[in-house]
Length: 129
Ligand SMILES: [Zn+2]
Ligand SMILES: [Zn+2]
Image (cartoon, rainbow, N blue to C red; front, top):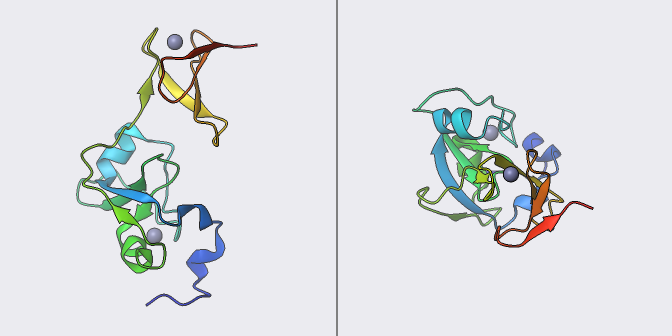
């Protein structure tokens, strides 16, 4: 059971309410999403370990350890996905470079090589102003 004043809720985790969550493991996170270093709730470090379970929201903004996932899944009303459709990264349709998301609300990606911005569906290229 989780109490209202659980210390793990001191981070700003409200954005994870009702998120869609994929299961994965430490090895995949280290390989594909190395910017995720620790559990968003308890700060447990991600290890390069196939047997360490992790849970990630579809936008890969953070990762959640197995224990915190189980403790908070009801409170946060998480919807568990099957883990097969994780989009680990998005590549530039022009040059293949991995794109980084900017402006988190608007789902805009930037290619650092060709200096183009792309909206979520990648078909509308926007020139950088
Ligand atoms: Zn945790
Ligand atoms: Zn590019």
